[in-house]
Every structure is written in C-alpha cells, then in structure tokens.
Image 1 (cartoon, helix red, strand yellow):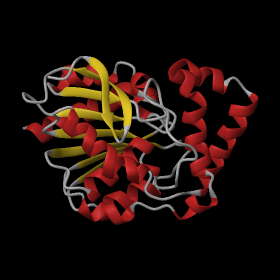
Image 2 (tube, rainbow, N blue to C red):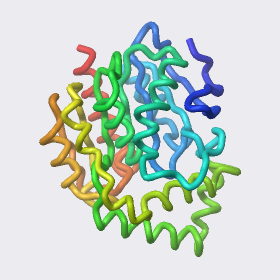
Image 3 (cartoon, rainbow, N blue to C red):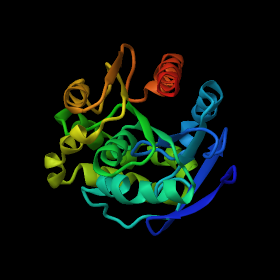
Image 4 (cartoon, rainbow, N blue to C red):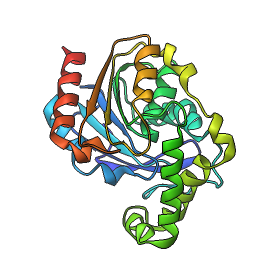
Length: 261
C-alpha cells in the first residue's frame, strides 16, 4: 500500500500525495483531481469522509505547480489539461498501484478526468464524479477569470492562496489564469472525448456557478456513451462540495454505492 503521504514521480515532476482508507489492492480508489487554483490540501476532509462512507480508498495529490509539488514550466500551454489527463494521470495511478478507480474532479480537475476517461484506455475506471466541469469556453467563465486576475493584483487573494501553495503561489495562479485568458483558449474544447466515456457519470454544478453554465452539463449528458446523472444545485456557486457540502457528500456516496453494488 502507498504510504499515508509522500511524493511520487509522474510526468517528470515530484508530486505530493496523501492516502486515506483501504489499500488499492483491497478496494477501489477515489482519485481526487483539484480545481485550477486548488491543491491536495484544499479538499480539506472531503476525501477522508467519502472513504469512510464508501469503503473506498481516497487518493489526493497536487499537480505540478501547486501545493507542495514541484513547480511547473510557465507559461502553461492551452493543452495543459490534455497533458494531465493523457500523460501525467496514467503514470501517477500506475506508480501508486491504483487498480480500480473512481475519478472525482472539480473544475479543471473534472476536465482532466474527462480527457483521461475518454482519451486513454483508463484500465479499471469504474465511474466519474464531475463537479463544475468544463468542456468548452464560455463568456461568463472568461469574464470571471479576468476578474480573478484583477483581484490577484489588487486584493489579498495572493496572500490567501499562498497559505496553500507556498512558493508555488505565482506558478499556480499565473499558470491557470494566463492559459485561460490566452486568445487561443477561446477555441479550447473537450467534446471529442465525451463519446469515449462509457463509465457512469455523476455531474454536479451550482446554479450560481460563476465559471460556467448548465450548457456544460447538457453537452456532457448528451454525448457520453454511458449513463449520466445530473445534479444542479440551487443556492450554490462554483464549489458545490463547499457550498452544499452534505448534499454533495450524500450524492457521491449514493453514486459510488451503486457502482460497487
């Protein structure tokens, strides 16, 4: 079994990870893929809670340029999520001995899960939980990212993020924001990967998500090959696992229970 926490080499970088619950040889593993400004620690206790409720292992890690992982090269290309899903994630899962997986991705992490599930053999993939996923760009999301860049330059946003990312803070923010506001990103699209996803999907989004509309969910539900369940939550923004914690934990627990039944 992997150590409870440590580092793993994947994609030419040393990535921090943490493990909770059963070993990968004894139970499926929930693999948590963080958002564009997130890291392993910013999931807080959600992985541990879901490991207890589902009986699965829980793996969290920080991508290169985030948290305590190695820095990444800047600027990121507009294909950085493709690279994570197609190249880095398969290596990480192999290095840590993950056999059966359920991907739990938030925002950028959900997009990475889509690329991995639809663009690689993804051996042992049982299902996907996609929280606030993106498969194409929208004006509302681009406007919110532009506003975040302004806030990073003029408010305490940088200091708040530095508590989680340390020396990686500028790498984390600029790598994300500069890629999304690159003019070439307006043509970014992941819909080609959706027909290759046969595993069941649970997609969750807040009605007040400032980074994307329900059109993202409609595209995913319409084009994935397997069953797709949608949970659209009122009074909820871009982070349903924070804004509507118990509703999201209950939905994921039930979904995973169905996968394992």
